[in-house]
Image (cartoon, rainbow, N blue to C red):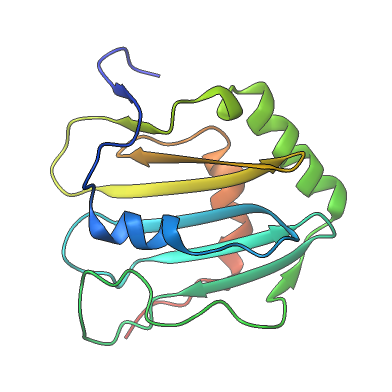
Length: 157
């Protein structure tokens, strides 16, 4: 991590797209949620997924249709899992976040850049849900998290 990054609590009145993601209630069975939200005015690249401890992964991406760019997702997560992930891998991801200090992170980290992206990671350790918004900073385990979604990505029209 660069020492020039800003790190602290999520600022008040933050970007409405991020607030909309954070305001969504996660199912009680969700142990990890990952949202990629473009910081520019085009939501076409936005995608997100949730994981349960049993490995049920629900994935959705923005449809690519026009509309309000301040709405990060124009479709809900599906009712049925998009794919199954080995529960041991889910446990390893949570443990990896824990060892990387995710659960002690104050909630916001940013590098100076124009546009870019928000990586919004929410995870449960025990009963508590912790959220961190990374703005133009790749969060711990970013490669592993995005690799889970790679096979499901469809290029928007």
